[in-house]
Image 1 (cartoon, rainbow, N blue to C red):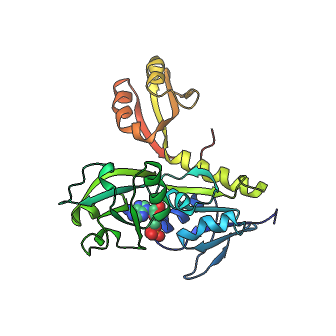
Image 2 (cartoon, rainbow, N blue to C red):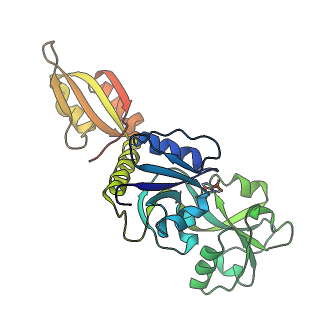
Image 3 (tube, rainbow, N blue to C red):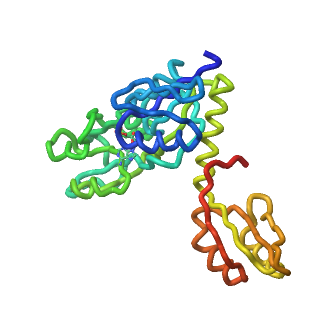
Amino acid sequence: MSNSLRIAVPNKGRLEEPSAALLRQAGLRFERTERSLAVPVAHSSIELLFVRTEDVVELVTDGVAGLGITGLDLVEESGLEPVVEAELGFGRCRLAAAVPEGSDALGLADFDGLRVATSHPNVVSRFFADKGIAITTVALRGSVEVAPKLDVADAVVDLVSTGSTMLVNGLRPIVTLLESQAVLVAGPGGPSTDLAKTVATMVRSVVVARKKRYVLMNAPHSSVVEIEDIIPGVESPTVVPLAHDGMVAIHSVVDTDEVWQVLPRLEQAGASGILVLPIEQMLS
Ligand code: AMP
């Protein structure tokens, strides 16, 4: 098993497409035909196992797969203890407790004695038990948000990303139990082979790169100090002389979130021909 690696990947749902895109960006080449469970990765001894998102943690902790991609909420719900190798920056959501609009409940303490519908019964039981609040969990696989209308429950704990589903169903959020996003997981003890470690590093390099942009520009040599102040780069910007007297090309790496603030300042400092490029992978 040391020279081969199975990676458990969601076969459908919200995490399916971004997980495959991440692995492709990390350099893995594969053709997935519909309904295929095991897909070989070209030029490697890696195999992707396309499975249900909620089965990933089990497969990884059992050692069936060396790595896996799933939601942090499902790691918490599983009660198992895989090692979270990287947070992947997609599939962001939160597990929120909410009550119907008309409910008297204002805070957590008001959940005492309520029936709480949820797709995450383990997380919910642990959370309320820790707080000494007695609830009854009603475990549902889907459509958690309609449970109060059907009088199956008095409150819900459900995954929310925008909050619009809760709003549409007349639910008022009270508290967030956990923040979640997609994660790369390995079995207890972490990646056990060099190949698994390499893939984890490649995946991490993509996650880091997505938060950065490569910025190139020309500028008069006299502006370098001011520009360096605006874009300090990973260590320091690269400054290359141009053929024309007194002009240089400056290259640097900027946080994606800051690009829109940085560009006008660079222009003001005398930069021209500014290019902003995506970075495929980055190890710092
Ligand atoms: P799936 O049910 O296969 O679409 O995937 C569910 C997983 O997607 C959850 O366990 C979360 O980790 C993640 N997710 C992200 N946003 C949401 C959301 N708004 N509702 C449900 N799941 C979400």
